[in-house]
Image (cartoon, rainbow, N blue to C red; front, side, top):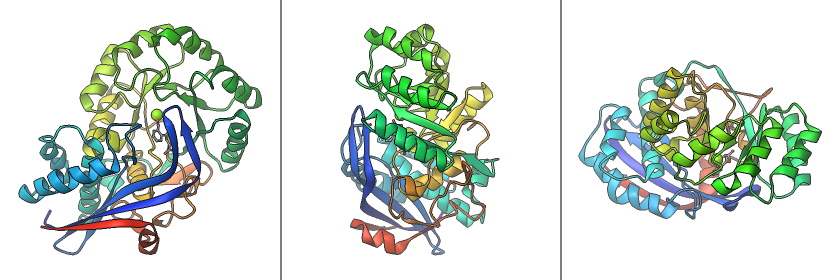
Length: 368
Ligand code: OSB
Ligand code: MG
């Protein structure tokens, strides 16, 4: 891969409506677009999905820029690679900072697939032509949640995820179940509970949830295993799974029955696929998580979710779920509950340069 240029674009766009979780509210989304251009003038794109503040993981947009500018891009410049699967090993000399790593690594995958005239999905071993789409309801009132669920079901979404915490759980879910007795529904707690809440969490078994996501501490493996023994609802881990080793430990310990794989959280497509392969061999279902992302990351998610082990709908929704206008063309659309996996080279979406310019905060260029 003869890299000639790496460009970083910091962008910011308001969400259509605030996204509320136990950990904080997102109203404006800042992000980083990475463009890697080779000596033939071909470009690949990646997206840094860290938030402006470190509420979900320790990374931020500013720390990602620091890592990319001062460590990751210089490392890639010094050690040219032949294939994007080498990037993960190269970047392992830098501790953590997975979202910064993934931003660059995913751009290399897109570039490689384009150079090979193959879709990214095919390049990584994807087998699905379409992927089932789910959506997240993240609001602070039952009335608003019911209204959003109705709207999303009309749009065709196959699974609804709601955000819960100790002030919004049993009666909230009961009301939703009363309106929708058979809806495939799951709940994400974003670490809002502790082992003192076992009875409270056990009570949620009443609602026949598909799973409960990350009920306990963001970095826990052990206590989730204790909890899983006490509740019937399957536990899905999100925040706790930052590496392949975390996934292996969680499965060995019985900490979860399902894993949410996010490319950014685990440091790139290579690590995401390793986790997928491990789970797939053992019959552990995985699904692709979301990061309130722009179109580039959404496109990478679609390619990832075309792998055979992504057997349940994840948090990959349409561009219009969050944005008045996305930065890709065409935008991601959901039809009858499915998103079509592009067959054109790379991620299969092009950048809407006008839109990118409209929301650009700053740009930096690194010549190789
Ligand atoms: O916990 O899964 C989460 C969004 C941002 C940070 C963390 C999470 C989320 C979501 C998915 O719930 C939102 C989406 O659809 O992108
Ligand atoms: Mg989550």
